[in-house]
Amino acid sequence: MTATKQTLEHLNQRQESDEESCILDWLSAVDYTSQQRDLLDRRQEGTGQRLLASEECTHWLCTPRATLFCPGIPCAGKTICSAIVVGDLTSRFEDKQDVGIAYIYCNFNRQDKQRAQDLISSLLKQLSKRRTSVPEAVKDLYKRYKTALTQINHLFKGGAFLEIQAHEDDIRRYLNGNMFKLPGFVNRNTTMQEEIMTVISHHVQGMFLLAQLYFESLIGRRSAKSIRTALKEFSKEFNDYTYDKAYDNAMSRIQGQLSEQTELAMQTLSWLACARRPLTSLELQHALAIEEGESSLDAENLSGIEDIHAVCAGLVTVENESGVIRLVHYTTQEYLERKKELLFPSAENKISALCITYISFDTSGSGICESDEAFEERLQSYPFYPYVVRHWDHHLKPAGNMRPDLMNFLKDQAKFDASEQAIHVSRHSSPNDWSQNFPRQKTGLHVAAYRGIEEAVSYFLQDQSAVNSCYNGGWTALKWAILIAE
Image 1 (cartoon, rainbow, N blue to C red):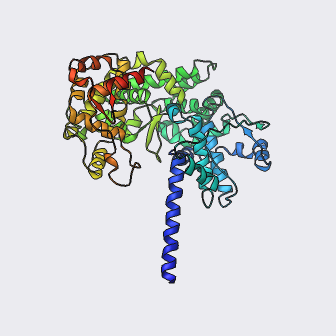
Image 2 (cartoon, rainbow, N blue to C red):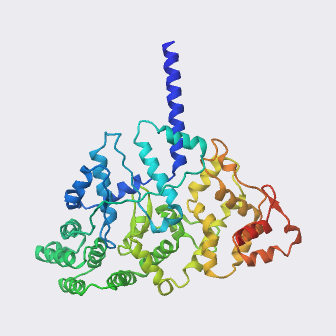
Image 3 (cartoon, rainbow, N blue to C red):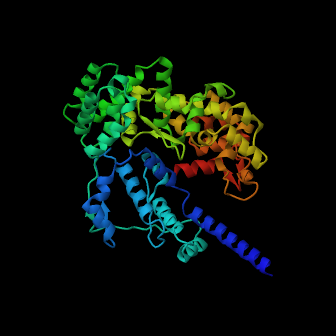
């Protein structure tokens, strides 16, 4: 009886655990833990202590219901400082379940997934996870709604005010910790090292990113005179164009590399600037390896992520925990967008062609995968596939032309069906046969209408029999066109 009772208790606990996991997943699919760890890993050891020891921060920690507002100029290091504070709180209250700790990291490239309700849901999920069990109120919400949470508006009032900017001692600590990256003649000259730290820390106006860009620009210098010439440039009056000049300098260094290195860097920046969502390192590697018009991906054309990072002059960064590779700052994105016509005059056209090549590979010619295992294998072999099938039209429209290769894809029902499977299925849709949960009988006309590709719609309408074709309970191309128009 005892063994049976223990077994039943174990099963009940497991069932409760599974239920709570479902509830937490329902609340939010976003997890900032990996980004938090990555930010702490990137922090120079010892930085941020001034913030933690500040009177404002101490008062905030010791005062019930207090708010600490920390604005700061662009690139002052607010994100890293936030990670330092979160890390300190997590360590300080690790064993206290009655202390709630939750955080969000907003990203300019994830605005579509960071609406108010998404952010609040993530906070609620984090607070619930710190408890021994999910609060009953959250369980009730799950049982009643399951598909949405009521938006919560909360106004912070009466909090302390502490502006965040990078302090000179933190910048010097960062520079000193990375001095080994500079040429040997610098590492043998302590006077020059001190000069570099003094000039940069004094002239970046509390902007950590600018310090990083200035430092990166010194890595390729080959003489003391060249270093000091650069330092004189850094010392000029700070103005609205300072960032652009720093980015211009980085682009000049990229252009000064060997031709293949320059090409790799420019393709990387083009993809990251134009991508409709953050890309993982593996996705970017595949994107860079696509050869327009080829029927398969040549594995020997894959570039190493370290090589990709090395040729980009400090303008990209890799989040080791999540595997995401991104532009180093939102100002980098803004700079590349302003200079897109000069730097990447035909980027969208090129990217749309590469996307269509990728979804047209011979491997998708066999059509849909009939099992979860086969579909998983396809995604493992072609990790860029989920991005391409969802966003090829987003790159096609800015390019402004109708591509013959796109028409070939839309007319190839097997390849088209394979892409539709990848768009619609989800690993969490059902425990078994999750790869089969997608609408059937969709045609190229339906997709052309849904995605607003007028030239393709005109082509398919030449076949009158296709006009009234429907799928998934009566959806015709006309219905999709009306829906999009509205």
